[in-house]
Length: 326
Ligand code: MEV
Image 1 (cartoon, rainbow, N blue to C red):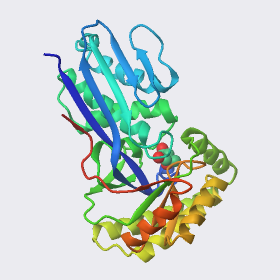
Image 2: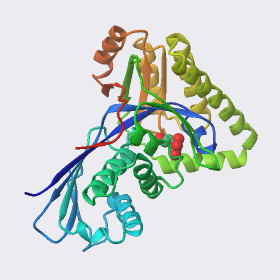
Image 3: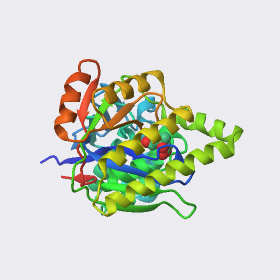
Image 4: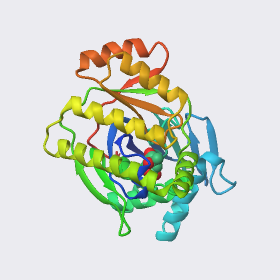
């Protein structure tokens, strides 16, 4: 019988601290109950094929150069081949299907959840013992191909799930992780404009070169916001009103460093008008998604009914489980 391996890894939202996290300030990310499904099947052919169901593109791995969207997978295969040279021959004779639930390039960590689920499925197929650390380490290499100099927060949350405080440092990231026990009444709205992580990160880097004390001053406040919010999570004491205020302040600061946009501001203000107590972009910005917090679920649902006439609108439920393989 032909073997089939299924892997799933969650998408994410950054609640607080995007961009600042690249420079060693803390950020808070939460895994979502939507993500990427990878299905690896043994095939009678002596080839390895990868198929994206969302883009309807196929790559015959050992016969041709990868199309641009598959370059991160090439990196994963190369890293696995280097680490486990005796095993890789077994990859000739499989087909891997990738299907993502979150809109691509929407700032929800689709590239990371895809890299993590793909790595987990391939390692499992090769009989390599699955450790979260190994999956995370290999997926980070793919994230570098996708985004240049990423902080690593996306692959970490896609591997471990839950809610994390992530702080980059020279010795490797410092991470605290919790399960989410009470769901926050959060809506997720896609602006319809693709976010471009690499460009947004480069833009901020250029601005920081010109105005280091201004940008670091802004990052200091963003870092303090993340610390305050993390204390709320740790103490299981979510002050929604305060959380909303902090989201609005974080949004203003992201706008100040140039990663908001007219479309994002339109969505932010539409959500506030519809009753949100806080709204901000999530992820790299310029396009992508906005998250909005409400006092309770009934307010979130009535706002959703209004906003979804114009925008793709989702309820952002957390997921405590990280990557898993069946
Ligand atoms: C990650 O989703 C968003 C950024 O903070 C980049 C990074 O952390 O690598 C903008």
